[in-house]
Length: 265
Image (cartoon, helix red, strand yellow):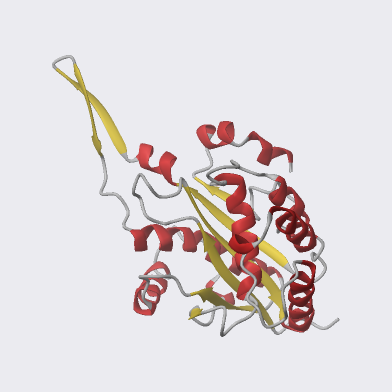
């Protein structure tokens, strides 16, 4: 097969990027990666997913509207699509990050806890998570000797101008390890009504979200990550899932102890 001309990345999120105590503990961004010659296969797979969940072809497929047994079926089918799709995701552990930017000091025998840095705003938290995802998308494109075309599900209260300014800024940031030669164009913000394959990104991000944020009544469910793991990118040497395909931020002793099951996938 000839070298692909383009790697298409469809990006969606799960959880809230807000730092408030009432928001989700985790914020997830996921990208479904499809080479140009596999786009038709990806769209056929989307139709098959709708059929398996009793949806009509013209209906939008939303994880939040699926019953439990349909979610399991969907995550299994998404895992079986590794022949023509791949997934990369970033999971931001918001409470652990918040603890890292606070300090505790003792004054006169009393302990005081205060912020060591200004907490990230919603946009800043969103863009930092996106940076890690962008890096991974670029690595896949670079290894495939092609360029990436990125489409992001338009999120509430987030402006295109903010994204453009961020992309321009991190190109000059030495700490960003993106392969910019594989990212010739800025990302596009679109809706699922305009780009049907964004529905696949919703399924991946939400399936991962079920393992971290869980459900108010039913708790967390890690089975969907296990089901989809086969299609998650592990890099050229088939590394641990957390190295490339599912990055946790931060990934340290605390988060490893909270999620030991990740090391077994």
